[in-house]
Length: 324
Image 1 (cartoon, helix red, strand yellow):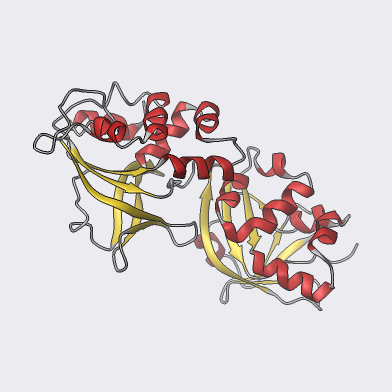
Image 2 (tube, rainbow, N blue to C red):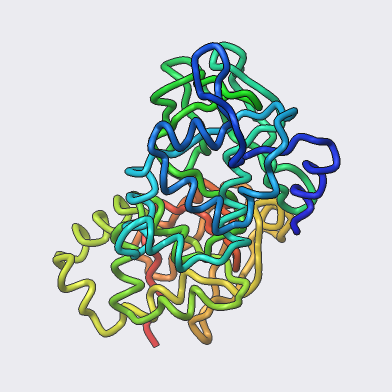
């Protein structure tokens, strides 16, 4: 049993999705589980059942806020991660992973939409010794998530339950440290070319392995700029014999966070997974100096997208290794 669950049970804040009684009427709302069932949030209920939460989280004296993804949201996540649908994803993911994902959707206090303030809200998912937080924005309707991955929007707010409140959302939120690097890249639509390149180069299994790895990940705009400079088509790039080497030039062994980057000498030379090739990193400007003098240097635009087996830093250009 995970630490957050033990804490939750110990404090009687227990009922993420519980199958207990109640008439579900307006004057006497049902439990969060009954609300989810009434609103046909079947993928959420199935995930909770697989995670072993339905029976354990059944106390009615809890006061929780649950951000509940729709079935369409679960299907969209499943498709993005390469599963046929939400059912296949729930069947494939282990109970602990599902439990962590669900915990990231729960606040340990009842918060109506009006009570949600812009800023970080601690969730029941504990990561690296502290509750992982959701960045809540309220200026144009309630949204939540983080600054790199696609945010979720509250589509139906303030669905009352006996043990808390439910806000229906249009995306499944993915917490840090749960999915692998390849899966995390698939979640970000700005990495579609990178994801296709990793698959074309046959590096999926490597980057989904134990690691840890640090990936300096070029965006689609970075790849578009490379195609413009080289005159290549996307198809030619994906079929190029040097593609795997170029991608490995963007990967460093170890989990190198933004704070670690800032602590490096200036400039620093960091070994990559492309043997014999290092990256020159200027930490005062968060710049990666390209070996190819005809190619622009890359700026680190966003940092610390944390995966199960490493970390991603978003960069603005594709780096080209020096010719052998």
